[in-house]
Length: 494
Image 1 (cartoon, rainbow, N blue to C red):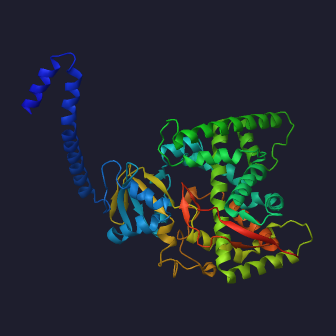
Image 2: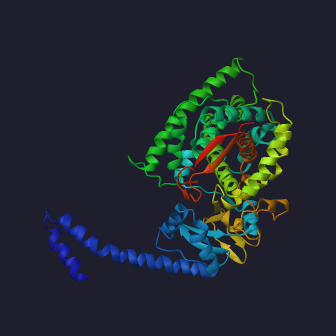
């Protein structure tokens, strides 16, 4: 070490060589200091973990941990098979890892799901990456806790609950009829996934919010989605940079719409309650209960939550019907019976929707095998004692849909497609495609209506078959059919 400092002193005596000596010295010392620091922190962490008995597992490399393995498995839509399951076999249902720089405990099973999701605000709180928060909005219900979350969810729930959606059924029917006439009629081949994305996007804006969809709007929202789970690096050319620019465009558009609607309501040009969710939010804003930013951020979140996941569920439902003719026959019989009792051109009603019991079983079984979300992160707000282990305060906790959906303990022969399994009861928190607890998906009932109404009009008007029956599923960041699920269609002559 003395020779290093001697070299430094000789070199730094020359003004021209001082900076060079500085970098040479630190270039030699930094790896040594980093190694000492890492060993010290690892020793400290090991002592802490032995004392507190944290779950077993491996933390991987410093900082990055097992992030690369996690994302590689996720992109191939094999998060459970390639990442979670091998660690469950090795360590048990509760294990630790390090993902995206955070020590994380992954839990599996209906009991774990119930414990975690029902203790929202008490033991854990929502924890999303910085990029997700910036793009979805810091004032959306995704980021709200406690009383504020309950209040905003209550306002939104009045439109998205079962009672609130009843007057929406005729609008949904008209939207589906118009969509099929415009995009399917006269066509021989369509991209089913893309078609359902266009439809569900239009339904959220026009039927639920009362906002006209302009050309290019869907593309702008999709640019935002691309950056939701990417590193929050505001550097030109990155996914996050493109997503942030798109988010600014959306916000500018929505601010204009919100302010115009506010003037209409305050000026008496529009009824205060026209049944549209946006109008209810703006009325809350006029009364001083909701800020303009809360309105904007919750609209953005709702659009993403309601259209992307639903379109995937619809597409996969049709894939399962195509691959299982016996199930398709039962679904068709159910919808033909409903149609026979309708006059020509008469819309479906909520009573008709209730008769689609087997169709909903097919959709649920599809979402069990192909969940629209893989799970969700939470953050421990206190030390948590669970299954004899301690999950330290500040650690992330991840529950996954696959932890129960693919488990023989809850679903017999779990990898087979069997809609009739939903005839029987199942353990609470075993089927969780929409999450659970206080943060259960607010758009659950809307998604159900979208799926059932779309299935009704397609199976009674068209025959179809898959052009790529074995098409794989990829994720970026949400799951989607690799080729967009192209199908060949033939109109039925009825």
